[in-house]
Length: 215
Image (cartoon, rainbow, N blue to C red; front, side, top):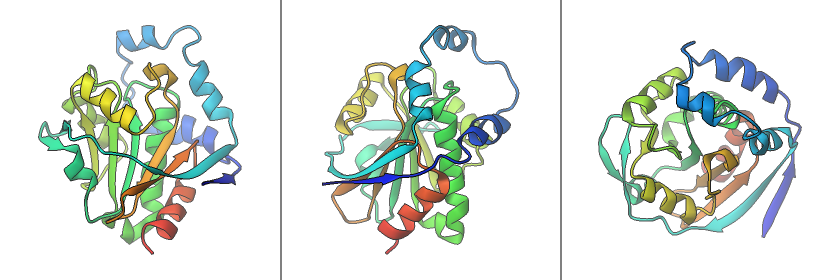
């Protein structure tokens, strides 16, 4: 059964133009990025950012046994990362996105600030859906821009493996430009996942973590 919640997206615009952009280092976007983001390819992301609703549902997903690469270049098994004794918060992003991804990443950062001392007990994972560009050194720089701590893992890997992961979590959109904002939460020791579709705020995510994962 799906549990629907409605929120007012207060501060989304501020997150986009202040939190997200303030986290950038001011360097120009790569040339291929400017080309890829031209025209009306932003349409799906703009639509996602304009919504004032998010939905919460319980889902069962089979975590694929794929090997991904973290921001330090180390190979890690996804099942090992996600089947941990800690609560997990997971999302999918790509670093050259200028719409929903910086908002989602800034939201994860805000979520951890709202959790305070409990943040270190949460395993945070962000998987790139643009593995050809988002290599480890790119992810490391991106994580630093959002002040990611040691409990926040950024992952990339082989394109086929990334597609497999996206399909396993029922969030494969065919193109990174059709990527929608989805957050996944997992209680330690439980098989199921809590799926949040939409741009929930960092404060809302922190409350979901406190209520659903820390109790």
